[in-house]
Image (cartoon, rainbow, N blue to C red; front, side, top):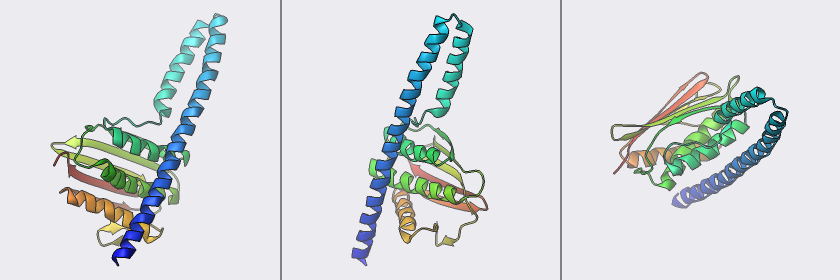
Length: 216
């Protein structure tokens, strides 16, 4: 039984590493696209200024400034590790046509280690991404993270196909048991740090929340 569990952990870690690599590549492709577009924008502005169309150039700059706020793929929470994890996952979400909204402001130092953050946030977001892809109609992920007193608070609402069946304290997905196993690991980490995590499934939406101490 122990050997079977270790094999599951190794398989899950391999899958997560492969996903992380693809997410990093996805961000790189996005940044290359922005660089290419930026060159075209400069040429347009140069032509407008040379032609004396200063008002058009100013309007163009204002439009570009507005677009930059919407297309920046990098999440900035105040925590470098969380930024890296969320940026990769949410970049993948955008490529799949999922609308993403993130509001997060947290400290750089947390009780959860980088590895624990990767397991917890990675598995919760993978679950949300999978649920979104199975949903009918609008696909969205709305994520919120902040500090409440001495606790780190996480809340995520995502679209889902329908009400999911609960097994014990967890909701399983339609994939193999490995995905549910990943959620169990996330729950175990939160519990080990004297926190709590809960889920709520309704028709068309799924909610995840957890609270965990900021420091030991």
